[in-house]
Amino acid sequence: MMDRDELAVWLRLQLTPGVGNATGRRLLTAFGLPHHIFEQPTATLGEVASARQSAALQREPPELPSLLATTWEWLQADPERHRVLTLGDPAYPQSLLNMEDPPLLLYGMGTPESWQSGGLASCAPRSVAVVGSRNPTPQGAANARQFSQALAEAGLTIVSGLALGVDGAAHEGALDGAPPGQLATIAVVGTGLDRVYPKQHLNLAHRIAQRGVLFSEYALGTPPVPANFPKRNRLIAGLSCGTLVVEAALKSGSLITARLAAEQGKDVFAIPGSIHSTQARGCHALIKQGAKLVENAQDVLEELQLVPASHAAMNVIAGNADDAGATGLSDSVNDLLDALGFDPVGLDALLARTGLDTPTLQAQLMELEIHGQVARLAGGLFQRMARS
Image (cartoon, rainbow, N blue to C red; front, side, top):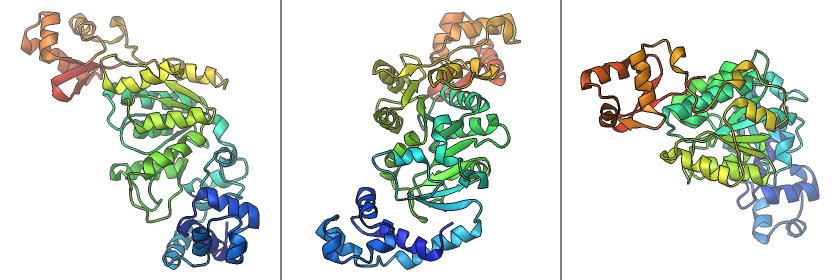
């Protein structure tokens, strides 16, 4: 782990106005470690950076002392789990170094094993990003959790963004499926690591830190700035060998992640959905553009040429429900399941399809809800749930 003086010069480079990742890398290539950069005269710096950047490098950012104290205290609070990784750190993920825009600094919080040689540095070949809507359908959330659990059981690390909806379900599924000692999941966040956003995921973030890693390129104290979240998506794609989109509207951050993955030469997978669902249109667009349509976790593993999936992975099938004989419900209730189909449907339509009276229909829908066969949606709609 770096000492305080080394941390200070890296933080200074990160904080220097107008000096981003690209200019920072050029300076490091030209002059070596950050303290050598700050020893250069303005004229020499001008051979690599602009006049404005060169002038800024001569001045210490006023916020540096405060950030240095905060970051050093954070590192010392749990030195086995808290890290600040620089571009030359052996634990810095190799796959990010191959990107056009790797962060100069990567703040990490995770298991002690993560920082050992051969851990995170080479995790990408066995990591899959699972992303999707912040407002998924009940089936979409279930798919995210089930696919992630099956892939984790097969030995993969699940990468996502800790957002509400699909991201949270993916992290939960990975934590459920990963065996002890395996790096279960990586969360790439858009705030400083001393903050959790959204707050609803505070407990989930703590669980990830115990069995996986949280990463951020943003300094401690950074609040949830909207522009930071699309930017972090390149890291989600970069830490993975493929990206699975579970549900997404046509304009969504998930499609940004998928595009970045494709630009990085990574595989993109998409789960199809109802043609009537706005949350499925992003996945359908990706499939039209060449993404691989997947119905189960085995499809993902086979495409990535990884180890055979477990029985669970082979049976996580999008849109596949138990047949009538496997539900354990009465024949009349199973008839209602058939009438539901797989698209959201209202009470009036079900009354017309089944011929049932309203009290009987409502009672059967309640029975199906209790057994997890049906989810109640906003607007008085009901949706049949696929069962693995």
